[in-house]
Length: 165
Image (cartoon, rainbow, N blue to C red):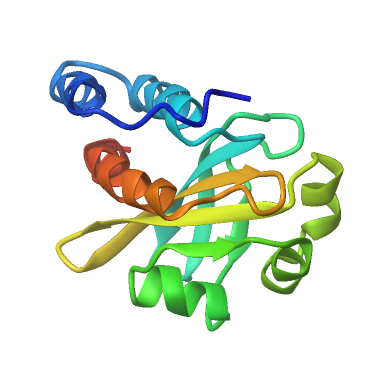
């Protein structure tokens, strides 16, 4: 696990902003965000999902564990408490305990098999639309308020990559 005292810095955000502004493939930015989130928040699993508004599905475009959660997997998210919070209202969603994870995610047996006991989902939005989510998973009771704040600063830097794909 990373040193939890490591705070997100302006230099961290500048690195991502410079990468986003340069010629790059979306996966390069996804990998850089994954590495930064591991450093400042910590994760056992990190995924990025793209929202398909017409079908209210989310599609995985990045995964730190391609065996358990391969790129391309889709999930229907219409009308769930999770989708109302994250996709409709644009709020960070945190399931802090195994019971909260079980309640929010149908694939909880796989989640638990990875040693995950808490999940934080950060919306990626642009102009009132939800383009995707950044999903950070770790052991139970892992997330702090500053983790959500860091996620909200990092997530907008993914907008160009999600729009480009």
